[in-house]
Image 1 (tube, chains in turn green, brown):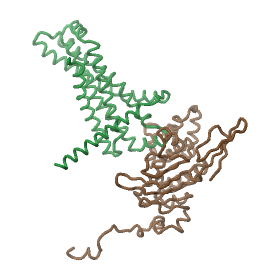
Image 2 (cartoon, helix red, strand yellow):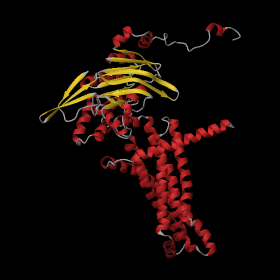
Image 3 (spheres, rainbow over the protein chains, first blue to last red):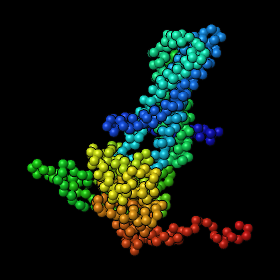
Image 4 (cartoon, each protein chain N blue to C red):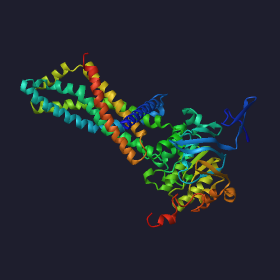
Length: 260
Length: 297
């Protein structure tokens, strides 16, 4: 029993230490005088690898999820003669929940794991150490552009996901199942609020982007510089990010959409 | 002590500085130590394991110094302590008049601009080619025009014999070529101090010969101070002016190669001559051999 308590205490202390380290890491990476001359090309390069290269998986997933929502929604609503409401159902589901959440999960799996593996490998091959010895701070040169790229990319990807999903819902609902197009768009327009739905969805995706990128770059930077260490760090990135997205989604939904 | 008289606007770092104004001209008088690195009473541990215990090391200015010792004695750790990547538990590490372990983050990065380190793996950036690797410190730390950067990079690559390999990616280079490119990158900014971590490890005789020659040649031509960590006794001794031998967290001998070969302790002689038995025993501690072989044991 005592041994169990001792282990629990040690694990708790370790977790607190990691949290503190990751906080200092974030602070050191982001706080400071911005260097636009050197920083902008690095940021654009990272926006390409983190954001643009994630587009395919986001667009394809968005399309299929939208199509499935259209199909399921139609099958449920048609029993009540309300299939005209399929547009608002697809849009609200995507904009409020599935857009930010699924994009967050896909982002963690695609871009997050790539960031962790890349930074971990740079650490294992002493590239980060060599940068330090050249008088270049790797936190500002390597970590900061990746963090900013993640923060910027994630909301844009979530918006693209939602837009493509709505289009997928329309393809199934309107073009295939024959729901009247005017009702599809008009119901959507009248029920989706910019402030309550779209803005809250963007805020969610901003939070998920911040958390997922932070976890990914920190796991890479803090990884044990061996092949096994990088493998563990990559796994941790996907697991922690996914749990964080799902947990935070509940908290944010409770704050945004519940009248206490 | 050296006394350096320098007609410039700012003094370079040194121990004691004085300034005399002569009309419009400023005359800086800097007294600098003969040693580029002075380590005094330094202790360092990893967890419960003591790596260095109250150790003193001198790295003479403008010379090639080899740090040698058995595996696991902390030679690479010593390089990282000199470079400020690790902090000692006690004592001081003075690098060109500055206590490197007490510097703030910004000052430390500024101090490192005058240092270079050649890593065992080369540590080239794998996403850019040879030319861009060598140009990297120049692009980050200077505002030189592109044609001047090109000329400097080509000169550095010519010095290591790899001007023709400028367009290759790091993955296309052999181990020896990787280290030569890394060496070109290390000297790109003209550092005062270059730290070499096992530069000869895993090299074929030709690559090793090239590296040995380059280290000595570049040190003399560029007036640098070089610190070399190596297991290759003959190669390291052949180019070293000063040798430090570390074992069991202590400095067991330092001086010129000739001095150590002739007057070193039995442990130093065993290490330099590569003898299998001596103060470092061949056998791992065990019970009596004959008793161990007797039936029933």
